[in-house]
Amino acid sequence: MLRYLRAGEDPKEVWLLRPDIISSTVTRATGLEAAIWGGRQPLIELLDRRGLIADAATRQHLTCLAKDIGSEDVVAYLSPGGAPSCETGAAFAILTERSRTATPAAR
Image (tube, rainbow, N blue to C red; front, side, top):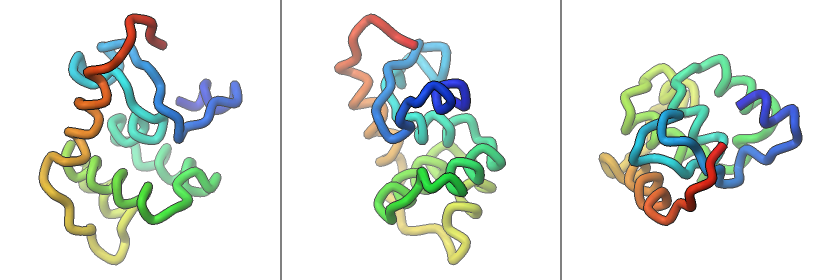
């Protein structure tokens, strides 16, 4: 993630990922979603400090994704006033649906 940021990649764009990065069912994700999947709160804090989690809709989606994958420390960081209501599995379903249209080349 950090290597791509240093290269000037936009973490809000959808990236095509190798199946071993997240899972065989998630091969297309934004850099921010991939960072959430990694579950490392310090990385999420760094991205947030850089202004990359700028709008409420992105923050809610990322919070719901963190909730879907059980990353409670990331959920707490992204929503210090309490987690938003999320439909269980909906954020994860967005990634799996997007991945169904992936092309063969991957990062």
